[in-house]
Image 1 (tube, rainbow, N blue to C red):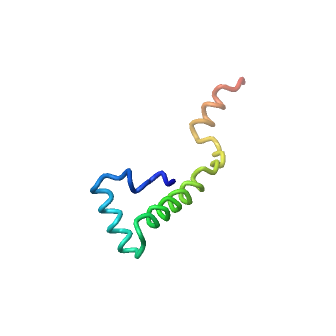
Image 2: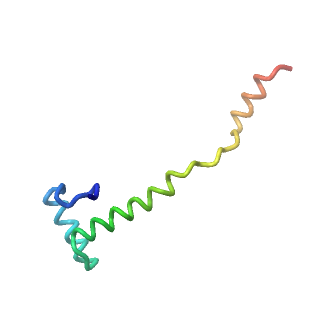
Image 3: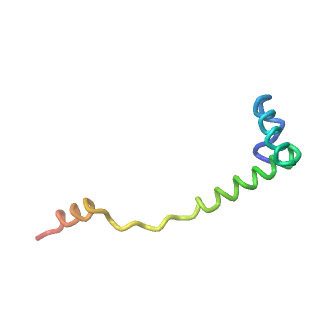
Length: 69
């Protein structure tokens, strides 16, 4: 089942989600499934590894300072 199950919402949250589902022309369960899919789709690209950055100014400066003459 969804991580955002409609039965686990507080009454206020449920009313809010019902209002949004009604505005989108969907049932509450369909709205919650769609919301979960959108959340998973947004999280997937964020899980990609980031490219390694080149060392900054102070890192390069400290590296040069620690090298022998």
